[in-house]
Length: 271
Image (cartoon, rainbow, N blue to C red; front, side, top):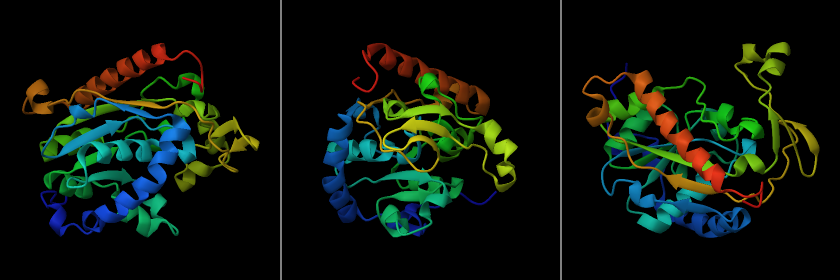
């Protein structure tokens, strides 16, 4: 394993964050996203005021997920730009013209080394362990936390000595009708050989039925995000915590919160 004790000062990924550019994007795009989704972000005060923290969230909304824009906008409104929030993302999102912009906004390639560097610098790191598998979960299973067995986030928090801050978001699976992840379809077409485990099928506006492409425009579903109380892994699970046990606890806490938020919704899309 590579050394993961570096700081943001010597990490090429984290050094690309540009607070002035981030503020410009947030001021331009943030209000539009917030109004379209009538977005609410609750209990940001649960994020520790200093030191690194790993925010672990469910991922929603398919290809056009609004999760990062909603959460980051609220974070910077609450805390300002002295402390960055870095978002871990698959290397595939950096392919194309958005590459430079994303890195300047604090989106960094998902790796234990990059996450550790950011956390050791005292930054907040946002991770969606379920990735695309989670964001394309069927609408009828929207209130289930399923990271597809991925537990690397627990090891990252343990090695960096930072708390896990569970966070849940509800509403984005109503921006269109997500029918299936299409695991069976991906296998049938042999796409798994190219490391494509899912081939999502959804129904929405304006194209109707979509198999990833063309991407439908998201309906203005109301999205509510809630930050839960931080989990001190060592204090709760001891000096040698069982990764699977920690993961199970985090997911159970998140799913309970998600079901509570679901019970408060009266109508799909309207919230």
